[in-house]
Image (cartoon, rainbow, N blue to C red; front, side, top):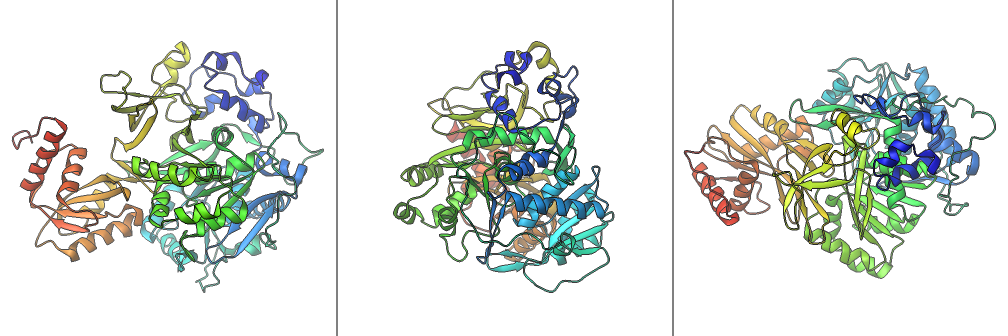
Length: 638
């Protein structure tokens, strides 16, 4: 692989970038690596990273594996009611080409966007891959979105085609996705066709432009039973992908390496969401680096919603790139009972599991410890990502899973960086951005101190670092190429533990929620004159949203329920406040963290709503400040 690393990359601390070099062994380019990796002269766009190169994404993910070992299982799918499907690489390759032809017939081309409002289904996987084959950008819309929020997302994306399903199983009930999509589309324009997966068999309204997924691609995804991997581990690919003789019928000629592979909608201050576009090479290389670092065997499961970036980039693209087997699960993990997670791991022989700390807290509350110890497990590595892991949860995971020979690790990344770029386990498993933490004085923090996480190396394909890299490319000595707005604390051994965002964004179950958007939603209620939304972190519940509200009239449970329902309808369930504190007034500006600490101290845990005076809040702020040794604010300061 050494010949694939240009001199400029070697000089930029190539030891840190070994993961990128290794990931090249799992990508096939239609031009030479030297041509693809020519250093940019004026970085300002993602395309500056990959001038001149082209890459056939679906060949790398599916077709080359189908040509070499088509009977290997690519995908194990399990539905919440217990139904299952498995697709071999050969079957997946065929389904993807059929779906690509169908999408082209609906007017989808390389400039189009396809929106997917589905859960984890085989059809979801096939459609994403079909978009990659065409060169169209795809974007996931969470199934939890209410019609109003769904319509807003669709307006921002302007997709040509929307994929949805008649209904989605969730905790034994069915969410009416097609009905929600129809309501959302009634207030939007631009969607030319809706493709519907027949999942539950429920009756749905039908309109001009609606198509059943199974009608478009013929027989639909394979329903063959799960089968063992006949090729064993199967991840030892040659240094470079080797094409079979002649092209696969219908296979694309590839796209420019900087071509937009997918579009992500992120929370931010204003507007409610922003769109980030991700290049094919950037996403594939980040996925390859992460998978190479955490992989412990041929079966990989990301136990999370498909709309989470980690699920698609690292739970789907990375494993397929290596020719591994992906496990996807449709619903919630407490159906039919709270041992469903262990059942799925055991049934498919999962060796590496990725999930969010929220899922781990739930498993802890279900007391799976004894059952896991009695069964044993095929798991060899558990990786969490998406939100901070508090010491109590980390201790529980290490105690519970290490007894079965499973290492516990924590990953960090950002959507702008195309996913996870740093993983800490028993050692640093991945550090493709060379992260460090600096205090307010700009110096590295010491054990026990907190500071902002900074990136000291660029990550290929990153969008947010483009402007900051100009000086870095010239001097190759920049100490901080990017400030992440993430707060970290240094442990005694020097490892960094993530505590959450420093800005007005909170990660809830791996999804980014804008606190300012939540506050705006609360202010839309006719009886609310002032509102602020805050991030709170509790030991047993993780990151949650709480709100401080000034309401006209007498506040009570009814008003609290109305406010929560308002946020739920506009932004979705993850954004709704878990606690609302009504106050008589709000004066001046108080640090978000101090205000949050004060409200948490004033109101008992698991309280849905409470009434406090602003004077009580100010006193609590002063008390918590004195406890930290800070200067307490006075009324005059405000």
